[in-house]
Image (cartoon, rainbow, N blue to C red; front, top):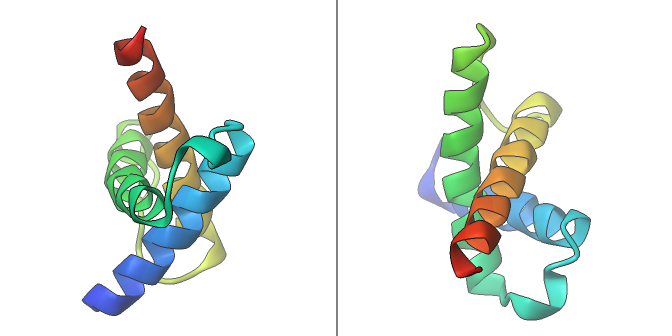
Length: 82
């Protein structure tokens, strides 16, 4: 996947995760993109642990995996902040 698609994909996944975690007002667009990209990597790793494929393209399954990973990243970030 090209870098532009990763940025778009990461931005959408990070934004959705921040809305789900009710963290949307605390984050900016750049943070959403970073959280989404990191979330895609974390989500792919977590899915690999349970025997499923991770992010494998620009599709709905990969989007859900990236959102799950971004939620985990936001949650861990909240734990560290406290």
